[in-house]
Each structure stands twice: as C-alpha cells, then as structure tokens.
Image (cartoon, rainbow, N blue to C red; front, side, top):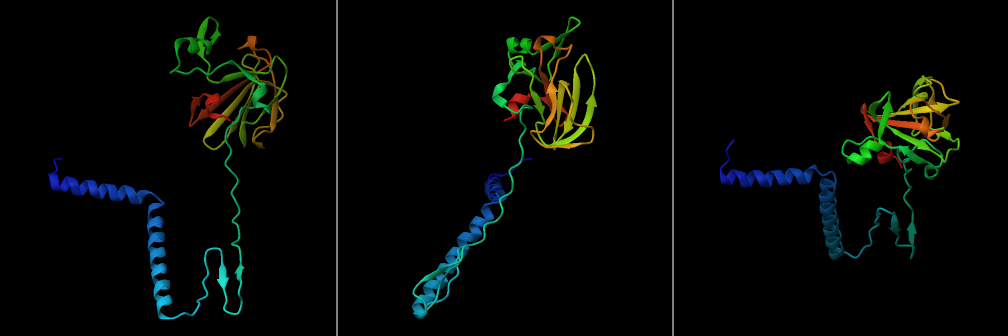
Length: 228
C-alpha cells in the first residue's frame, strides 16, 4: 500500500510512541516523574504560605514531629524473595569430574566434529542425539538434571537401561545405566540420585558411562550447551 510523505512521517512518529509505551517500565517511569514534580510543587507552595511543619511519610517512613527533635524510622517490611528457577544441569553430582566421550551431533559443526559425533551400528552411521559422559573409567552416580516426573523406565541390553523424566518444556533421557533407583510416576528433585553409570552394546568403547539426551519441545538439543 502506498503512503504519502506526510502520512509516513506521522506513522513513523506514532509507531515510535507505541514502541516506547510497549516497554513495561515506560508508563510507570513517566507516572513517577509527574508525581515527583507534582509533590515538589505542592510542598514549595505550602512552605511559602506558612512555616508549619507537616508530617511527611516517605517510602522509608521517616516522620518528623514538632514535639520531638529527632526523626523516627520505621523500615519497610522486606518482601520475600522468590526462589530462582531451576536450570538444567549435567546428570552428575560433580560437573567437573566427568568428560564427554562422544559429543552431540551438531548439524552446524564442521565435518571433523560431526564425524566424532557419529554412532556406528552394523556398518551404518547414526547421529548421536545426546552426549556420553564418563568419569575416568570409574563408576559414578547418575542424578536428575532437573526436578520433574519419571515417565518411562526401559531395560535394554543393547542401548542400556533407560529412564525418562519430564520437566517444564523439557524431557531428559538417561541411558546405559544400572541400579535404577526410581519408579514410573515418581516425582524427583534436581540432583537426586536416580541410577548408577553402566554399559551398553551401542557404545562399548565408553565403558562405564551415561548417555544423556535433552529434548526441548520435542526436538533434541545439545545438553552441554544448555546445562550449567
């Protein structure tokens, strides 16, 4: 649709104003600025009319009284701070103790990195949809990456025993594990031990390990890139 020059300038200005007021802080900031100016004017006029001291209550409740030379202070009650939201973590107690034996297959990575992330089964190559974590060949505890609900437990010698946990927006899968310590339908908390590292025929070279996958909105994502 064509627009004449005058209308275009007016539309641009209108759009800028709309963008400014879309910011949630913009309206309160203007309101508070106007309020400060208004209150300042009132007290200036009042001081010109008479010298009586008014009882003023500020945000921190400082109050001046004529019969007392001191200010009294009534601190405002501190609101309870909400607990920070959980972030995904690698499924081990000590994040620094494990290393990635086989990385996630990233389509945007270079050819060498992609080759390292391939899984070979019967001379057929498949992309690794998670990461395989090891701890110097030693056994280790596998923990819940985030609080959630156990929705699936599988026993499979080829891929290794597996547990799936649903979280808000995420599904995590722990594979090639032993001694599963949770049950389907159980609510688990972040960091809770759910199993022990194990082995699988799918990746025998890894030895004791856990294959860890993360799905966000049904799509596999690199666990290392989104965990802390």
